[in-house]
Image 1 (cartoon, rainbow, N blue to C red):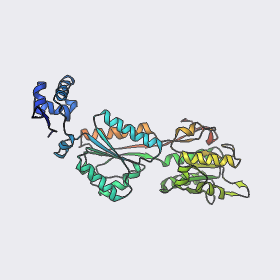
Image 2: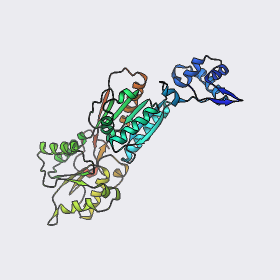
Image 3: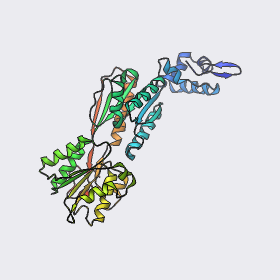
Image 4: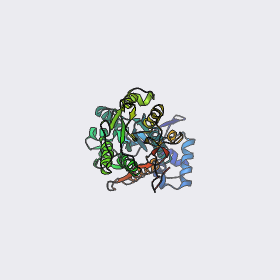
Length: 358
């Protein structure tokens, strides 16, 4: 099925393109639907003929008829951290390089919204679906496990395996980096750690990993050793909720914690500023580690230790799984596992680890 164009009162079809290019109708059709199986010179002749006839294939109509549309939907939080927004853009670029049109959509906040979005993609005949961590559980729960039945390929980016039937997964474990941070504190003589998380969705897995590693190294988890900062405080970067929570930890003019692990670099920068206002030095008085490896964290003095999200490897893993599945739907279910890694910088204090990442 193709998009019909009128030329001198005659509807232009793929047959006209084939005739002008001097090839069979099947070869002309493959130049659009399966370009990799057509010789480059032959495909150039076909595309030239199509251009001269003002012919364009209707990939949506072909998808509704059971063929490929060469479109892929990407569901990702568009208000996420800069590194993940950059990753989304790079995924789109990788898809375009391979001849796929990406639909980039913000993460739905409800099951109903996820269902509506998926149904819209199904109606459009989308070939593949990529869903990021924040939305993976919402989407898989909303679709009750039949995602793979509705798309040729589905890749989920998660922080822990979901096991959705037929869906390939790229698991980016966050907890290992929290354990590495706690171990670094212990190795360098810090005994009283503080963990600062951000709302409204707090990961209990991260909290458990950090606190268990602290206990394993006999670090002292004091009362109020875990605090949750409001989203507003982080986005506005003003001493509101987070500043007040930190102020409450100062007893008789003394701040009892000697190490702070923050859920992201924005929190770490806020904490760094708060410590300076209180006359506390980083890292001499308080060691400080953030998360997400934002560029600004490496530019201030002292530079802020952080966590490498392994964006390059994640991009490669997602696109490799997707393209492999699009080419061969009978492949066994695949999973790639990547663990985020602690990046030592001056704010963490102490001796850099042997496998130093800067």
